[in-house]
Amino acid sequence: MGDFSSSETRGRVQEITINRPEVMNALHWKASKEISDLFDAFVEDRDLWVSIITGSGEKAFCAGNDLKFQAAGDGQRRLPHGFCGITARFDNTKPVIAAVNGLALGGGFEIVLACDIVIASETAFFALPEPRVGLAAGAGGMQRLPREIGLKPALGMMLTGRRVSAQEGKELGFVNEVVAPGEVMEAARAWADQILECGPLSVRASKEVAYKSMSMASLEDSLKAEYPTMKTLRASKDFIEGPKAFAEKRAPNWRGE
Image (cartoon, rainbow, N blue to C red; front, top):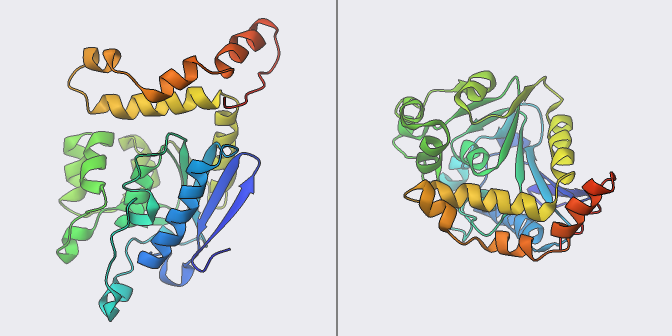
């Protein structure tokens, strides 16, 4: 356990908990650096295939940047992989699940938007409230939200700073599942287990192609593009194991190689 977070391993799943409930899990640069190191380890560990991030307590997933800490004079320090070590991380093709147990505001919502699957408690709320205090969502929120839910709905949130419920988040498209309070980690683990039933290299290729193709000019360009994870997949033992297991009517023995 670190000073500001904890990490546990459950089989092939890494579980990270932001542990600053006294400030609604708001993050200063030291906490961001600590969690960034955990994500570094996840990316490098061949035995870890899925990550889940959540917040401690029942009130907040993450209330964003710790403005009181910043105002006290220690300032901000830019980290290579962004806020919480994830908002500017583009080296990870493994899936990351956000288990949103409460408020996800500002940078906290930007963490959520940087994850691949979002499970939210019925008590969760999401917002980019920075304009209300003369700031802007500089950790990817202004770029990711329009891409994920469309321009007009995103502007409706960003230009007002309004809070959106978990259910509305599901209707808008940035939440995958809404669950009862206290069940968010159970649901996130169930999603992780479903991912682990699939070939890990297939999952990583699917993630890389989906994200990279979104920025390409046309469908034709995305179909013609070369993707490193697809090359790795086609040359892998898992690429043979999957069809073989299907033909033999048994569960595949994925090796991630």
